[in-house]
Length: 526
Image 1 (cartoon, rainbow, N blue to C red):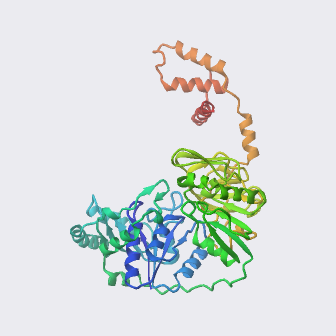
Image 2 (cartoon, rainbow, N blue to C red; image 1 turned 120 degrees about the vertical axis):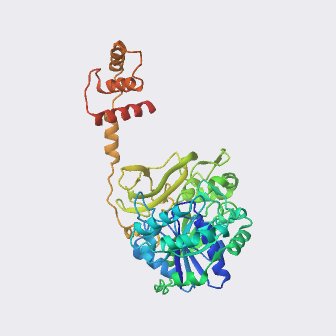
Image 3 (tube, helix red, strand yellow; image 1 turned 30 degrees about the vertical axis):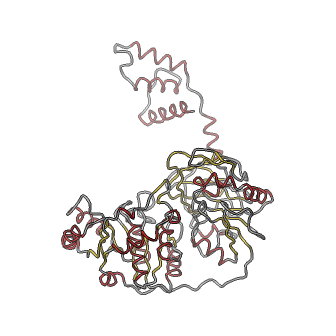
């Protein structure tokens, strides 16, 4: 069985384009391939699914334990003739400045051969130096071959013998420059597959243009098929859960939905854009993330469904909402047209465009109170990627970046999961997210954090600057034999320090200088 991971030295190298070309070509060859994505990405698997007509699955070593990742890989690779996994970012890039949850760690966990995608534009033998560095950075690297992307036939023929001689790696093929097959991007990455009307034609052109030594690739990547784990024993549906699924709400892990089904949930999909009512006889509601900001007007115009969700929420229907789903539960939402539209009104707060990427990356979320999903003190890994925010984020969760203090608050009511972690329900575990004690499946991480009480105590102890002392310091520095303001910003900082210490005559070490300056800046912003 051909099994390999497609990686690259950095983001923007064309991993998704190459992966789709390879998947389409494998499908044409009758190999019956399946696809996976390294990390928390929702969009790339949509393209895999479009190429293959079957679901693609995420494998994330931050959100899941290694054994869980191995189980998921074996489960979804079973019965296929090839398994192709697309990496994330640069090959070794993981959480923070580490290799944790990187494409390399996934290859190492699953013992997958790696095909490295390289764009040769603007370099020649330097490519060999870069590739040798990648080969030697971790042992084993798992890199078995090179595929040149955005490369002409002439350049391929020139570079291939040099790269093979300098690196010892075979160059298994190339994908030429195809400007007509470029996939457009937006604030959360690529446009979704469903938004590209001629996607199948583009995938076909990519597969037509792809040049691969299939025999060599098979030798490099052939591995025994992973032993398929026993599937969960089917059980009678115990609850019917309504799941939002359309263009506005399309960020849901396939593994999460399968976990719900395995636990006995019947999933009833509906469209907040088009349906006038919720599915009948439901015992729960799941609103995943997506692009509600792109469809804010249409969501608002569907007043019948907004009212149905608001009524269901007021009646206590167990509801889980994440990312865009959370924004939909708020009072209003600012669309990409900068207009503000009414939403369901289940929760307080308004969604708005921050104008930039906020709260990006992996984090750990700790429950501060008991809720439908968690007990107080339980911690689970999450991933965030947001350009929109809410004016009401709640206070029943703390979210911490690795090795940092708490950076935000989250709220979990008895019947509602609130706030943004995009992968709150992307647990990738055999047990369902809505099961009792489900969060216990995750490894609890030690975190340094400040409690809310400690924070409020600290803030209460901060007093306003002493303006009398500031004026005295200003008079003192102005009286010295120098041009007025001759010390520039330093004079302002000295005056600020005087205001903070209460005296124009002070003497403290450099560390306190930095603290005082930052505190003064905080007061000015406030």
